[in-house]
Image (cartoon, rainbow, N blue to C red; front, side, top):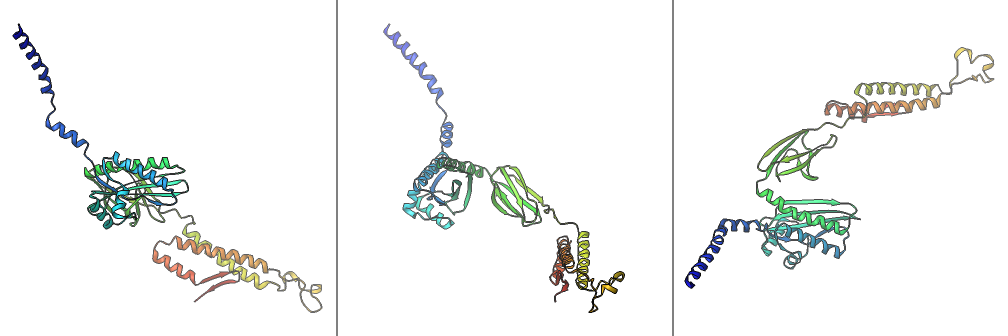
Amino acid sequence: MVAACATATALALGLAQAPVAFAAPPDGSAESSASSTDVAGKAAILPLVVDGDLPDADRDTLTGQLVEGLQRGSFEIVTPDQVAAVAGSGDCDKPGCMKKIAGQTGATHIVRATVQVVDRDYSVRVELFDGSDGTKIVSASEGCEICGVVDVGGLMQTQAATLRTKLDALASGPAAVNITSDPEGAEVTLDGEVFGTTPVDKPLIPGDHVIRVSKDGYISVQEKRTFVEGARETLSYELEKVPNRLPKRPWGYASLGVGIAAVGGSLALTYLDYEDFRIGGACKGENVDFEGDCRHVFNTKWYGVGLGLAGGALVTLGVAILISTAKSPRKQAKIEAAAKHLQVGPGGVGVRF
């Protein structure tokens, strides 16, 4: 009876242990669990760079938020105090300096955060650099108007955590873009940051980006594009000139002609001023004084001055229209050179040599 009970107990224990043996996870799953918590790298955080007035207590608050954000991004942290202890508290913005700090702290990456303060407006920028050569890998930036330090700290933490996402996107293979424009030499910005001058051929982080192409004298073009990792896109933009508010070229000739005629008329009126009015016998008989002078004379001086001013303005407008509507730079240069020798005023038109 005792033997039977012992056998039954042993059988029950064996059955109870069997499911445990089958439920043991395979070696591969343990490795994948470990890899899911792999750190993004060891990041040495440089002392916070502040442009503007910011109390020390607020600096400490923002630095703490920066550290928390990087920890959210699974970075192993070398704090700003630890960096300052080995490299000093000065601003480090050169590749050689960053490479040196990485070597001193054993960091794979360098993080540099800047805060610009204007009254209660803040701009936050967090940059991640490669510790091996000091080159910038990714950056994140955002602004906040009429904000408190708590709001800015939230921005700082979010931007710091975003660095891991951008770093992972780069690791999966960057996208690339070739941007050209007509005319060339236009400035290209990517998400509000300067990206280059056309033609531009650069890699960029996959995802949605806002591209803006602008050049003085031309209408800017802006659009949102989605870039896929490993894919290369070619974008071409034709910029249109800003509409000219001046009239068309024929009006330039008309204005110039009428202006010159008006200046000529002003000369005639100025010459006639105080001359005898001899039309219709106005200077005969009782209209002549005892000295033989006519009692009626032309009073045209101020009419001449007014006509001269109007004529000068029309000539200036005509020249401006002709210069602005010239079809070739060479022709435009000729008109400008001729205009330099032209003198227009109430007293007449002159040529300066």
